[in-house]
Image (cartoon, rainbow, N blue to C red; front, side, top):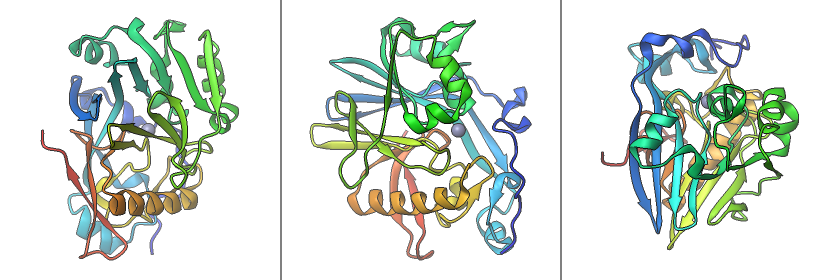
Length: 282
Ligand SMILES: [Zn+2]
């Protein structure tokens, strides 16, 4: 098995920032029980092979024949009778525009749940040195808070901060906001956290950065990326979570899953140990 890229690149590689690749903001909404969950897209783009770790030449030829695969940068909004909750903030470039298209102002956000402390997830917490969501409490895992100086700096701007220890998939996680449960998925970062939305008997797992390259990480969950602080742990947790959501028929949403960002995971009989992603109808 050939390692395509083993050098650890900076968290934000140049390719993430190429301005020509940034699409206008887009939203996509689904109902989960009494909740409305919306993908807030900051970018729809293609990524390359340079970030993959542990992908064989045969698998690349099979699953990524063009050398490029769809990717995205997104955050999620959860609206319920208890108010509006953001899961991540993206870089912050399209958040205001996207929220306004749903009739939401920054001041309406009561909670910001952070999956992990990379710039494409917490960069939008702060605008011009001030909290971008002035009335929000920020929730972040203790491990990422302690790991990331940017997380400590940005969350210090907020009047209310909740530093948590997420639970596990098997025990249902730790409730962080009404009906939203934090679940540990360590590996991409030391404290990488997923959020399970539960309402009216329905569920949606917002899995943060469990995947970056769906084209190959679904059929081959063992492929990791250079952004993972612990690629082996990231691969283990990815396999376990994919198995769980496929077996339990739980829809998922990801921050780097191409539009519409939300869908179902199914076992892939053609690739034992692998999975397929079925996007929600647009
Ligand atoms: Zn990310």
